[in-house]
Length: 96
Image (cartoon, rainbow, N blue to C red; front, side, top):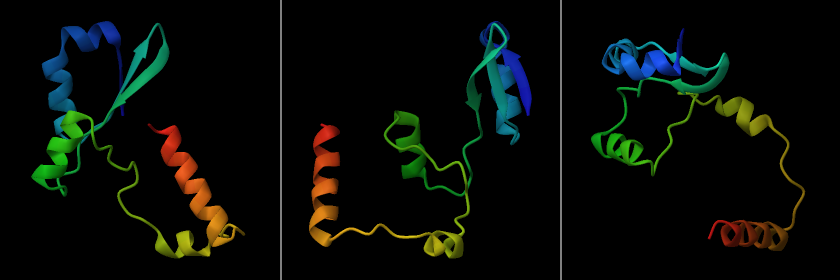
């Protein structure tokens, strides 16, 4: 992982992107405070997914592999189907 200042990123963007394309990560700092990470896009995604990422519609997961055993071992919510549906519908309304 490499750290660059915002000023250096602006001045040498092409060089920094070449570094990221090689599989490396860059942390961008502004006045010594980290403000962003630039990560390479995994090559295992489809062209359609790549376009969605570029347009900002899709955000790729930070973890490429899912530990399903760990996921299913997590405790589940103790909700009725009705309460779960109500929560989902409320969440969808907030996103509008």
